[in-house]
Image 1 (cartoon, rainbow, N blue to C red):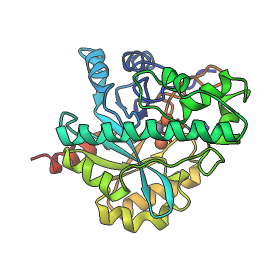
Image 2 (tube, helix red, strand yellow):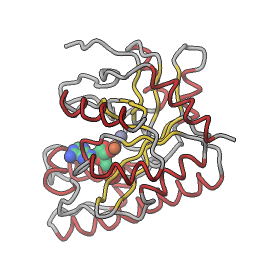
Image 3 (tube, helix red, strand yellow):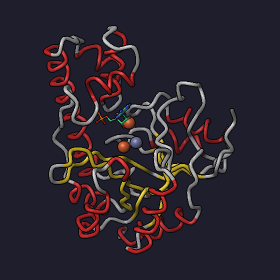
Image 4 (cartoon, rainbow, N blue to C red):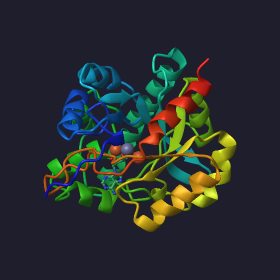
Length: 282
Ligand code: AMP
Ligand code: FE
Ligand code: FE
Ligand code: ZN
């Protein structure tokens, strides 16, 4: 089952957050699959970027700086914002990312307590051990639930306990959506709304996003069908937003195939992201 790799993938996770492969391994996979450009977009951390950039040196593969920030807006608990082409090495930015990761740990502890109440005891120590150096997240909790035999798969862990609004879902302290957009701009990056399909109503959120200075929309995404993608592309065009795309690769699919590099991404988005980011770089 070989899918033809496309050339760009701007949404990839590594062991710096909840992906299975190290940043260097993600780069190696991108090269194997003949990609021209990628962005590593780990949750609330830029810790994997240096390794990815080093691994891609002299290979012809372009690696953009990237990050995926978990934010909230109004009563929406999970609005994910991608940042691209920023300069990671900024003390305030890194301080905020550290705070976000600390809050992820606080939340993990609360989730473990909630899971015990729900009859699915696991230990915080094991969750943190699974996460290792990574920004700890629900996938690490899912893994602990699987190991403890409370569920038969990660999918079941989310379906029964961890999904947004699920019985063991707990929000964490984090930046609001406008704050996160401002933060990305402050480090000279372009801010892109991730997987709009997962929002209750992407169109309804648009005025707030535009007010906050959003730069782009991730219209191309594995879970977006043709109709939704077309709607997002039209929306982006109407509001001068950059259309981007990516696979949100974390690990092999259950059948062993890799989603990395299989999403159609408009090649002009690279130059557009860079030009937009340059506006914010003084
Ligand atoms: P967190 O960053 O801790 O809020 O966890 C969010 C991450 O959990 C996402 O980036 C995905 O990797 C994963 N995730 C979210 N929902 C699901 C789901 N329904 N099934 C499997 N994984 C999911
Ligand atoms: Fe993730
Ligand atoms: Fe996301
Ligand atoms: Zn992601």
